[in-house]
Length: 484
Image 1 (cartoon, one colour):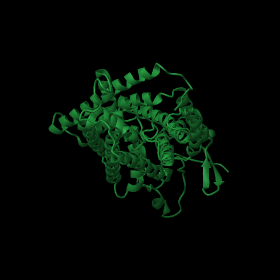
Image 2 (cartoon, one colour):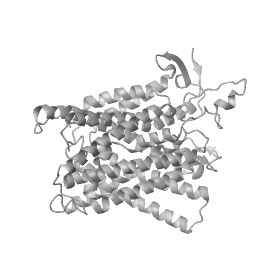
Image 3 (cartoon, rainbow, N blue to C red):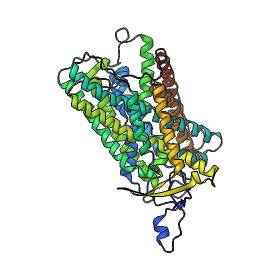
Image 4 (cartoon, helix red, strand yellow):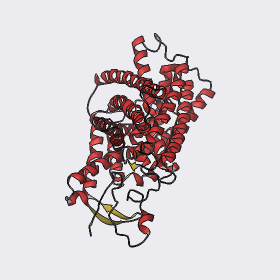
């Protein structure tokens, strides 16, 4: 028998109207009338680590190589501080006008609407959802490259390191898409904690393997060329290439920390006692500190191991060949991590579209009706036909785009450049100024504005580097011919 579901929040897709005959009403609901949230520092930290530590951690050796020992580690530390600082301001904006007792904002757009309003809400939505869609497509490509790397690793082991062993990425994109179709039926962000914890463990696993192999290479007496300024003009690159690659490296490091696109959505899973903003600040500290530790170790030790010839990814790029079984395991860990990370980034998209559809067509049974089904090992699962069709179509779309545009990761760097400044820096600072009523032209107002404009410059130079890389890639572009 079908039950009508009233869904008031973008993240509470299965919350229904119920009549309580006793005091259980208050026990089971939060102050906004939604099902009581159960998130903690641990689950919020897992979501952050899953979102932040991507397989890009393995390309940080390349970024350090472009900047050198002087600038590389410094840029890593600077952006870790910027990200943590702005995330604490954004955490205070989950409620408005008071960060502890105010009305909840369920999404980033809701927070911008509450504090800033106007066209800035549309700008926020464009930047946030453009970034989220881009990331899910990019993860489809990256996961397929990791799975192909397993096959290539075994081929190299069997036929020697000089063998081509080239394999199409498309079948692995389809496999990844099929897995995501199933996982996308998880109703909302609140049900993702277990998947984020698994993904976070996987990220630690492959990062540790990459770090361990780099340490072993350094200990084995590597003769890698390193320098204070990174790759050498006239030896490794031309002067123009040096500039463009430095821009790309700075942008890659800046974007590697960004998780503001989903911070408010993560915070909406946290229980209300202690206050959500305090819990989220602790989770941000844990997440950013853990990320910075792994980024610095993998980037710096990786650069020491490979020097100026550091590959873009020293696992999928075969900086290492042996032990092949360990390389295989690390790449499988990358793929599993990206399976979880894909869900963390696509759930806000699902929630936004489904909420909009329910508000647009509230009488449409296809959109609003839930069908309880008894599932083995799961219990009652509320099947919604619109959710099933729309989410499946979205996953198929991301897989098709990934296959048509195998260079999309280059385009993703451009999307990241466009979204970094408004989402990670500009909106958190502007909302903080509005919330705390910082006097215009005061010392605090001035240095916050300087920070915002400095990060805008970073976004612009990174965008320029991304466009240059994209132009080079397009010269050899062939659709549906993605090979590793």
